Amino acid sequence: MKTCIVVGAQGFIGSAFAAEAEARGYALTAVDLDNYAEFRGTEADLLVNAAGNSRKFIDDQDPVRGYELSVTSVMNVLHDFRCGLYVQLSTGAIYPHENDPRRNGEDAPLPPAEMTRYGFHKWLAEQLVRHYAPRHLILRMGGFVGPHLRKNAVYDLLAGKPLFVHPDSEFQIMDTRDLARAVFGLCEGPSLPVALLNFSSRGAVSVRQIAAWAGVELPPNADRLPRVRAELNVERAARLLALPETAATLRAFIQEVRSGRLVLP
Image 1: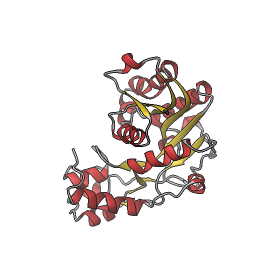
Image 2: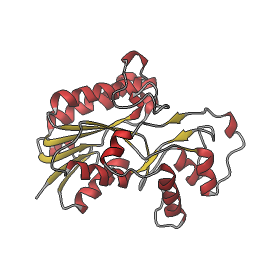
Image 3: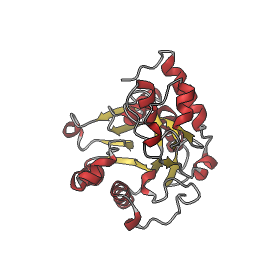
């Protein structure tokens, strides 16, 4: 039987990988903070590290803590577990031009001095993976929806929470379940075609459009909120497999929530 370790298996993205591993018949070792010491030393065919910090503000407010969460934690996993293939879930925030797919392909220059603190820490973690995991796949990802969603503009709109970005902000969104299926498909192929991929759905959609699809009225102060944009160049990934469209992903997710088939926390 094939074996798989998912670190961060109870988290938003990690839970999708854990569910997909079990659906594909892997013997799963689901690792989290509570049982990390118990499973230290475990070996597997595949390891997915989904335990990275996604709270960018920590790196700005407390860079030492941000470093521990994004860099030291990855070194610990690389040291504490053994695997045939190591998958690192990284982020498109590494790119100084995360907003422009013409300037953030996998081969784009990455001057560390131009990165945010969060992006720099994630980039450092990638270097550890390259050095310590001979066979690896690094995924620089965009935004997500899916079961256990607890934050981002989509969640805020659907859950009636305060919005923190301008309605004309644009995001590239993938469902965590689509991510897990696609990554396992890549890893189970006869050979791993690449070691680094930008990975998300195709295209970006505005918060204003998401609100319209969800039938949600925007707050009166929305036009005073900061405008942001995030869209990765996913041409390399699109040559390897069929990527979903962000618009179709969001429409399907909104329908799933509105119908009651998926309940947000």
